[in-house]
Picture (tube, one colour):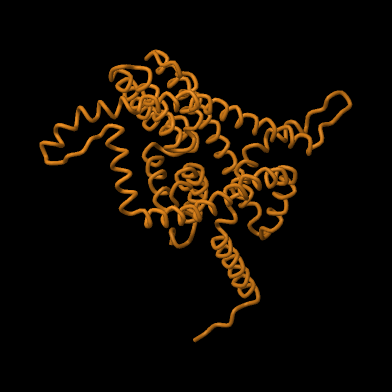
Length: 360
Protein backbone atom coordinates (compact mmCIF):
# COMPACT_ATOMS: atom_id res chain seq x y z
CA UNK A 1 0.00 0.00 0.00
CA UNK A 2 1.55 3.32 -1.11
CA UNK A 3 1.41 6.27 1.25
CA UNK A 4 1.07 9.73 -0.30
CA UNK A 5 4.07 11.99 0.28
CA UNK A 6 3.59 15.26 2.12
CA UNK A 7 4.63 18.56 0.56
CA UNK A 8 7.67 18.75 2.83
CA UNK A 9 8.76 15.23 1.87
CA UNK A 10 8.41 16.06 -1.82
CA UNK A 11 10.49 19.21 -1.40
CA UNK A 12 13.14 17.27 0.53
CA UNK A 13 13.34 14.61 -2.19
CA UNK A 14 13.53 17.28 -4.89
CA UNK A 15 16.40 19.18 -3.26
CA UNK A 16 18.29 15.97 -2.47
CA UNK A 17 18.03 15.07 -6.17
CA UNK A 18 19.22 18.56 -7.16
CA UNK A 19 22.26 18.39 -4.86
CA UNK A 20 23.01 14.85 -6.05
CA UNK A 21 22.98 16.01 -9.67
CA UNK A 22 25.21 18.94 -8.72
CA UNK A 23 27.76 16.60 -7.09
CA UNK A 24 27.75 14.35 -10.17
CA UNK A 25 28.39 17.43 -12.33
CA UNK A 26 31.34 18.38 -10.13
CA UNK A 27 32.77 14.87 -10.48
CA UNK A 28 32.41 15.05 -14.26
CA UNK A 29 34.15 18.45 -14.31
CA UNK A 30 37.01 17.25 -12.07
CA UNK A 31 39.93 18.21 -14.39
CA UNK A 32 38.46 21.68 -14.98
CA UNK A 33 38.07 22.27 -11.24
CA UNK A 34 41.77 21.67 -10.46
CA UNK A 35 42.86 25.37 -10.49
CA UNK A 36 39.74 26.37 -8.54
CA UNK A 37 40.36 23.69 -5.90
CA UNK A 38 44.04 24.66 -5.60
CA UNK A 39 43.12 28.34 -5.34
CA UNK A 40 40.49 27.57 -2.69
CA UNK A 41 43.06 25.69 -0.57
CA UNK A 42 45.52 28.58 -0.90
CA UNK A 43 42.80 31.11 -0.12
CA UNK A 44 41.88 29.26 3.07
CA UNK A 45 45.53 29.26 4.15
CA UNK A 46 46.20 32.91 3.22
CA UNK A 47 42.92 34.49 4.36
CA UNK A 48 44.01 35.00 8.04
CA UNK A 49 46.93 37.12 6.83
CA UNK A 50 44.63 39.15 4.60
CA UNK A 51 42.21 39.68 7.51
CA UNK A 52 45.00 40.95 9.77
CA UNK A 53 46.19 43.44 7.15
CA UNK A 54 42.61 44.41 6.38
CA UNK A 55 42.02 45.40 10.02
CA UNK A 56 45.26 47.37 10.38
CA UNK A 57 45.13 51.15 10.58
CA UNK A 58 48.16 53.35 9.88
CA UNK A 59 47.38 56.72 11.45
CA UNK A 60 44.36 57.80 9.41
CA UNK A 61 44.80 55.29 6.60
CA UNK A 62 42.84 52.04 6.62
CA UNK A 63 44.32 49.25 4.53
CA UNK A 64 41.67 48.36 1.90
CA UNK A 65 41.05 44.66 1.35
CA UNK A 66 42.19 44.64 -2.32
CA UNK A 67 45.54 46.09 -1.25
CA UNK A 68 45.80 43.53 1.59
CA UNK A 69 45.07 40.71 -0.87
CA UNK A 70 47.74 41.96 -3.27
CA UNK A 71 50.33 42.29 -0.50
CA UNK A 72 49.69 38.76 0.84
CA UNK A 73 49.75 37.25 -2.65
CA UNK A 74 52.99 39.06 -3.51
CA UNK A 75 54.63 37.81 -0.30
CA UNK A 76 53.43 34.26 -0.97
CA UNK A 77 54.66 34.12 -4.55
CA UNK A 78 57.94 35.77 -3.52
CA UNK A 79 58.42 32.94 -1.02
CA UNK A 80 57.78 30.41 -3.81
CA UNK A 81 60.25 32.25 -6.05
CA UNK A 82 62.84 32.20 -3.25
CA UNK A 83 62.40 28.43 -2.96
CA UNK A 84 62.93 28.09 -6.72
CA UNK A 85 66.01 30.29 -6.49
CA UNK A 86 67.37 27.95 -3.83
CA UNK A 87 66.74 24.83 -5.94
CA UNK A 88 67.91 26.06 -9.36
CA UNK A 89 71.50 27.05 -8.41
CA UNK A 90 72.01 23.64 -6.81
CA UNK A 91 70.84 21.93 -9.99
CA UNK A 92 72.94 24.23 -12.17
CA UNK A 93 75.99 23.37 -10.08
CA UNK A 94 75.45 19.62 -9.83
CA UNK A 95 74.18 18.69 -13.33
CA UNK A 96 77.35 19.73 -15.27
CA UNK A 97 79.54 18.03 -12.65
CA UNK A 98 77.39 14.91 -12.91
CA UNK A 99 77.70 14.91 -16.70
CA UNK A 100 81.48 15.13 -16.36
CA UNK A 101 81.48 12.19 -13.93
CA UNK A 102 79.27 9.88 -16.03
CA UNK A 103 82.09 8.45 -18.25
CA UNK A 104 84.24 7.59 -15.21
CA UNK A 105 81.22 6.07 -13.46
CA UNK A 106 80.40 3.93 -16.52
CA UNK A 107 84.03 2.81 -16.76
CA UNK A 108 83.96 1.67 -13.13
CA UNK A 109 80.64 -0.09 -13.75
CA UNK A 110 82.09 -1.86 -16.80
CA UNK A 111 85.15 -3.00 -14.82
CA UNK A 112 82.88 -4.32 -12.07
CA UNK A 113 80.14 -6.05 -14.09
CA UNK A 114 81.84 -6.70 -17.46
CA UNK A 115 83.74 -9.85 -16.47
CA UNK A 116 80.69 -11.34 -14.75
CA UNK A 117 78.51 -10.69 -17.80
CA UNK A 118 81.10 -12.33 -20.06
CA UNK A 119 81.07 -15.39 -17.81
CA UNK A 120 77.32 -15.58 -18.41
CA UNK A 121 77.83 -15.33 -22.17
CA UNK A 122 76.70 -11.70 -22.47
CA UNK A 123 79.23 -9.77 -24.51
CA UNK A 124 78.51 -6.12 -23.90
CA UNK A 125 80.52 -3.13 -22.78
CA UNK A 126 78.98 -0.81 -20.20
CA UNK A 127 81.29 2.15 -20.82
CA UNK A 128 80.23 5.23 -22.79
CA UNK A 129 81.34 3.81 -26.17
CA UNK A 130 79.51 0.54 -25.60
CA UNK A 131 76.28 2.23 -24.53
CA UNK A 132 76.41 4.54 -27.56
CA UNK A 133 76.78 1.47 -29.79
CA UNK A 134 73.80 -0.28 -28.15
CA UNK A 135 71.62 2.80 -28.48
CA UNK A 136 72.54 3.31 -32.14
CA UNK A 137 71.76 -0.34 -32.94
CA UNK A 138 68.38 -0.11 -31.23
CA UNK A 139 67.57 3.14 -33.02
CA UNK A 140 68.47 1.56 -36.40
CA UNK A 141 66.44 -1.60 -35.80
CA UNK A 142 63.24 0.08 -34.63
CA UNK A 143 63.56 3.64 -35.81
CA UNK A 144 60.05 3.98 -37.26
CA UNK A 145 58.30 2.65 -34.14
CA UNK A 146 60.39 4.87 -31.90
CA UNK A 147 59.68 7.91 -34.08
CA UNK A 148 55.92 7.26 -34.04
CA UNK A 149 56.02 6.74 -30.26
CA UNK A 150 57.95 9.99 -29.83
CA UNK A 151 55.39 11.87 -31.93
CA UNK A 152 52.51 10.39 -29.94
CA UNK A 153 54.23 11.28 -26.66
CA UNK A 154 54.91 14.79 -27.95
CA UNK A 155 51.23 15.28 -28.77
CA UNK A 156 50.11 14.03 -25.35
CA UNK A 157 52.89 15.93 -23.61
CA UNK A 158 52.07 19.12 -25.48
CA UNK A 159 48.45 18.91 -24.39
CA UNK A 160 49.53 18.28 -20.79
CA UNK A 161 51.93 21.24 -20.89
CA UNK A 162 49.19 23.52 -22.19
CA UNK A 163 46.91 22.29 -19.42
CA UNK A 164 49.55 23.01 -16.78
CA UNK A 165 50.19 26.47 -18.20
CA UNK A 166 46.46 27.26 -18.10
CA UNK A 167 46.28 26.00 -14.51
CA UNK A 168 49.29 28.06 -13.40
CA UNK A 169 47.83 31.20 -15.02
CA UNK A 170 44.35 30.64 -13.59
CA UNK A 171 45.35 29.93 -9.99
CA UNK A 172 46.54 33.51 -9.13
CA UNK A 173 43.48 35.05 -10.80
CA UNK A 174 41.03 32.76 -8.99
CA UNK A 175 42.98 33.19 -5.75
CA UNK A 176 42.72 36.99 -5.94
CA UNK A 177 38.94 36.97 -6.38
CA UNK A 178 38.43 34.29 -3.72
CA UNK A 179 40.41 36.27 -1.15
CA UNK A 180 38.67 39.50 -2.15
CA UNK A 181 35.21 37.95 -1.75
CA UNK A 182 36.00 35.40 0.99
CA UNK A 183 33.65 36.49 3.77
CA UNK A 184 30.67 37.36 1.52
CA UNK A 185 31.14 33.99 -0.20
CA UNK A 186 31.05 32.16 3.14
CA UNK A 187 27.95 34.14 4.08
CA UNK A 188 26.25 33.09 0.82
CA UNK A 189 27.13 29.45 1.49
CA UNK A 190 25.74 29.71 5.02
CA UNK A 191 22.63 31.38 3.62
CA UNK A 192 22.02 28.38 1.36
CA UNK A 193 21.88 25.93 4.30
CA UNK A 194 18.32 25.03 5.42
CA UNK A 195 17.43 27.05 8.49
CA UNK A 196 16.69 24.00 10.61
CA UNK A 197 20.31 22.82 10.20
CA UNK A 198 22.11 26.18 10.26
CA UNK A 199 23.17 26.06 13.93
CA UNK A 200 24.54 22.53 13.72
CA UNK A 201 26.25 23.24 10.38
CA UNK A 202 27.99 26.37 11.68
CA UNK A 203 29.15 24.51 14.79
CA UNK A 204 30.65 21.73 12.66
CA UNK A 205 32.28 24.28 10.33
CA UNK A 206 33.90 26.03 13.32
CA UNK A 207 35.23 22.71 14.62
CA UNK A 208 36.66 21.85 11.20
CA UNK A 209 38.23 25.30 10.92
CA UNK A 210 39.90 24.89 14.33
CA UNK A 211 41.22 21.45 13.44
CA UNK A 212 42.57 22.56 10.07
CA UNK A 213 44.29 25.57 11.64
CA UNK A 214 45.96 23.23 14.13
CA UNK A 215 46.93 20.93 11.25
CA UNK A 216 48.62 23.78 9.38
CA UNK A 217 50.56 24.85 12.48
CA UNK A 218 51.66 21.27 13.11
CA UNK A 219 52.73 20.80 9.50
CA UNK A 220 54.77 24.01 9.61
CA UNK A 221 56.53 22.76 12.75
CA UNK A 222 57.33 19.45 11.01
CA UNK A 223 58.77 21.32 8.00
CA UNK A 224 60.90 23.57 10.21
CA UNK A 225 62.27 20.70 12.33
CA UNK A 226 63.10 18.57 9.27
CA UNK A 227 64.75 21.48 7.43
CA UNK A 228 67.03 22.05 10.45
CA UNK A 229 67.69 18.31 10.85
CA UNK A 230 68.65 17.63 7.23
CA UNK A 231 70.74 20.81 6.96
CA UNK A 232 72.68 20.08 10.17
CA UNK A 233 73.05 16.37 9.35
CA UNK A 234 74.45 17.01 5.86
CA UNK A 235 76.66 19.78 7.23
CA UNK A 236 78.17 17.45 9.85
CA UNK A 237 78.77 14.86 7.08
CA UNK A 238 80.79 17.50 5.21
CA UNK A 239 78.50 18.29 2.26
CA UNK A 240 79.10 21.57 0.45
CA UNK A 241 75.41 21.88 -0.48
CA UNK A 242 74.10 20.93 2.98
CA UNK A 243 72.07 24.10 3.57
CA UNK A 244 70.11 24.31 0.28
CA UNK A 245 69.48 20.55 0.05
CA UNK A 246 68.36 20.41 3.69
CA UNK A 247 66.03 23.38 3.26
CA UNK A 248 64.54 21.89 0.08
CA UNK A 249 63.91 18.53 1.77
CA UNK A 250 62.30 20.10 4.82
CA UNK A 251 60.13 22.70 3.10
CA UNK A 252 58.77 20.27 0.49
CA UNK A 253 57.92 17.59 3.04
CA UNK A 254 54.29 18.78 3.06
CA UNK A 255 54.02 17.08 -0.36
CA UNK A 256 54.40 13.41 0.58
CA UNK A 257 57.32 11.62 -1.10
CA UNK A 258 58.22 14.62 -3.31
CA UNK A 259 60.25 16.57 -0.76
CA UNK A 260 61.99 13.47 0.57
CA UNK A 261 62.61 12.04 -2.92
CA UNK A 262 63.96 15.28 -4.40
CA UNK A 263 66.21 15.93 -1.42
CA UNK A 264 67.49 12.33 -1.48
CA UNK A 265 68.33 12.53 -5.19
CA UNK A 266 70.15 15.87 -4.77
CA UNK A 267 72.07 14.56 -1.76
CA UNK A 268 73.09 11.36 -3.59
CA UNK A 269 74.29 13.36 -6.59
CA UNK A 270 76.31 15.60 -4.26
CA UNK A 271 77.77 12.50 -2.57
CA UNK A 272 78.86 10.98 -5.89
CA UNK A 273 80.43 14.26 -7.03
CA UNK A 274 82.10 15.33 -3.80
CA UNK A 275 83.39 12.08 -2.27
CA UNK A 276 85.81 9.70 -3.98
CA UNK A 277 84.61 6.66 -2.00
CA UNK A 278 81.24 5.38 -0.78
CA UNK A 279 81.33 7.33 2.49
CA UNK A 280 79.08 10.11 1.12
CA UNK A 281 76.44 7.66 -0.12
CA UNK A 282 76.49 5.83 3.23
CA UNK A 283 76.11 9.14 5.08
CA UNK A 284 73.14 10.14 2.88
CA UNK A 285 71.50 6.74 3.43
CA UNK A 286 71.89 7.08 7.19
CA UNK A 287 70.73 10.70 7.41
CA UNK A 288 67.69 10.27 5.17
CA UNK A 289 66.75 6.87 6.58
CA UNK A 290 66.79 8.23 10.14
CA UNK A 291 64.95 11.36 8.98
CA UNK A 292 62.18 9.29 7.42
CA UNK A 293 61.81 7.29 10.65
CA UNK A 294 61.69 10.48 12.74
CA UNK A 295 59.10 12.04 10.45
CA UNK A 296 56.88 8.98 10.06
CA UNK A 297 56.90 7.65 13.61
CA UNK A 298 57.37 10.76 15.75
CA UNK A 299 56.98 14.19 14.13
CA UNK A 300 53.90 13.66 11.95
CA UNK A 301 51.93 11.56 14.47
CA UNK A 302 52.85 13.84 17.41
CA UNK A 303 52.88 17.34 15.92
CA UNK A 304 50.19 16.84 13.26
CA UNK A 305 48.17 13.79 14.26
CA UNK A 306 47.61 14.76 17.88
CA UNK A 307 46.70 18.34 16.90
CA UNK A 308 43.79 17.09 14.80
CA UNK A 309 42.84 14.39 17.28
CA UNK A 310 44.11 11.40 15.28
CA UNK A 311 46.33 8.78 16.87
CA UNK A 312 49.43 7.55 14.98
CA UNK A 313 47.69 4.43 13.62
CA UNK A 314 44.85 6.57 12.26
CA UNK A 315 47.38 8.89 10.57
CA UNK A 316 49.11 5.95 8.84
CA UNK A 317 45.76 4.44 7.82
CA UNK A 318 44.52 7.79 6.47
CA UNK A 319 47.61 8.19 4.28
CA UNK A 320 47.28 4.67 2.87
CA UNK A 321 43.50 4.78 2.41
CA UNK A 322 43.29 8.19 0.73
CA UNK A 323 46.29 7.36 -1.43
CA UNK A 324 44.57 4.16 -2.60
CA UNK A 325 41.26 5.94 -3.30
CA UNK A 326 42.44 9.23 -4.83
CA UNK A 327 46.12 8.78 -5.72
CA UNK A 328 48.65 11.53 -5.11
CA UNK A 329 46.00 14.19 -4.40
CA UNK A 330 44.48 11.86 -1.81
CA UNK A 331 47.83 11.47 -0.03
CA UNK A 332 48.27 15.24 -0.05
CA UNK A 333 44.84 15.90 1.47
CA UNK A 334 44.63 12.78 3.68
CA UNK A 335 45.07 14.40 7.09
CA UNK A 336 42.90 17.52 6.64
CA UNK A 337 40.18 15.43 4.98
CA UNK A 338 40.41 13.00 7.89
CA UNK A 339 39.90 15.90 10.28
CA UNK A 340 36.71 16.90 8.46
CA UNK A 341 35.44 13.31 8.45
CA UNK A 342 36.31 12.98 12.14
CA UNK A 343 34.13 15.99 13.02
CA UNK A 344 31.25 14.59 10.94
CA UNK A 345 31.66 11.14 12.53
CA UNK A 346 31.71 12.63 16.04
CA UNK A 347 28.40 14.43 15.43
CA UNK A 348 26.93 11.35 13.75
CA UNK A 349 27.95 9.18 16.71
CA UNK A 350 26.44 11.68 19.17
CA UNK A 351 23.20 11.68 17.18
CA UNK A 352 23.21 7.87 17.07
CA UNK A 353 23.74 7.51 20.83
CA UNK A 354 20.84 9.89 21.54
CA UNK A 355 18.47 8.30 19.00
CA UNK A 356 15.49 6.14 19.91
CA UNK A 357 16.92 3.41 17.64
CA UNK A 358 19.87 3.02 20.02
CA UNK A 359 18.08 3.63 23.33
CA UNK A 360 14.85 1.71 22.69
